[in-house]
Length: 114
Image 1 (cartoon, one colour):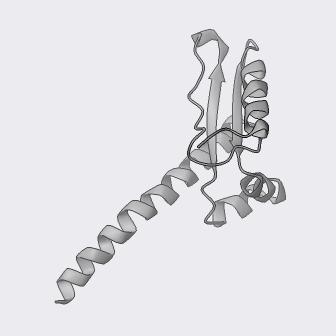
Image 2 (cartoon, helix red, strand yellow):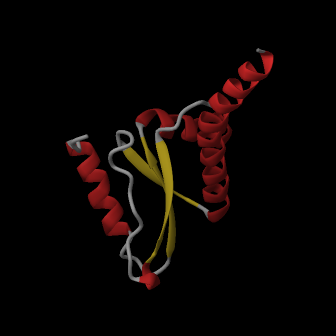
């Protein structure tokens, strides 16, 4: 997926703020995900939206985190605290797990019914 001008702008800004001398937690993603989050973190948690990711910039480690730029449209970001980062990361992992495990369990249940 080619990066849009908006995504390039967001990535440039993320690179700029990652050069600060303290740990920074960031939520980035689509307008849908960010709108849900701004409404309330719980709105994003309860939605089926997967168009977001969370990263940590730690300037003292001397490396930049990997930004997913081909999984969804990057339309913005916001700074978050450690606790929110942990909750969003956990929520995203559970959503992905349900996408992977759910169909596998359905297939298994169907085999058991035959």
